[in-house]
Image 1 (cartoon, helix red, strand yellow):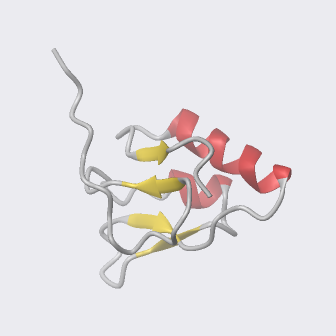
Image 2 (cartoon, one colour):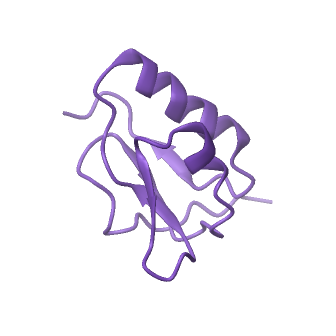
Image 3 (cartoon, helix red, strand yellow):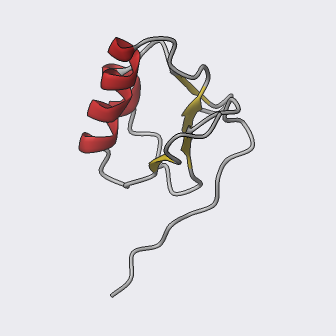
Length: 80
């Protein structure tokens, strides 16, 4: 079975990290990377509010990726 990839949310800040429409709003990402994620107006999903500014924030987002139950946080690699 092929996993669904989801569609990149328009709310994401431009950059390599983003969330998709598969987000269920659980908030785990926010708990791991508070400085980078924000919730939607209706709290139904989270998105990348600010791309990481240093290695600590990159590590925090990667931790969030590792615990995301919906696998909806993506990393496009070395996108500028």
